[in-house]
Length: 143
Image (cartoon, rainbow, N blue to C red; front, side, top):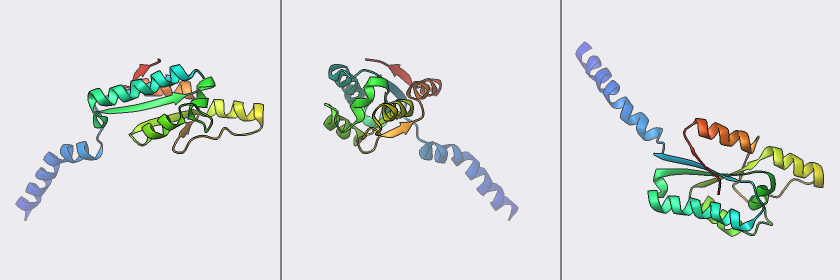
């Protein structure tokens, strides 16, 4: 009986790194892309960067976050000239983050919360989120 327990324990210890690797899968590449301008050309470049990275590395091999703050927040709203692309990329494992500080500022100026596209996550502060991601090993891109 002791031999069986020892064998089972040993097997679990040997297999635990494999089990954890599967459940805690982290892509080899990680990138955070800043959008802080209301210029549709710059916003499209940021979206092109995400598409090109997924094509080059494979969508399962890269985590991509696009963080919008300041004038760039408009990219993630219903009035965005690139809203169809944002919506499409959100369905293709590109994560979009909206700056909570910018959201508060817009509400203070207009009296209304910006109407974000579906699936957009609000982070407390866009710049802080980028800094935190860099500390977590994300590459930083600002088109």
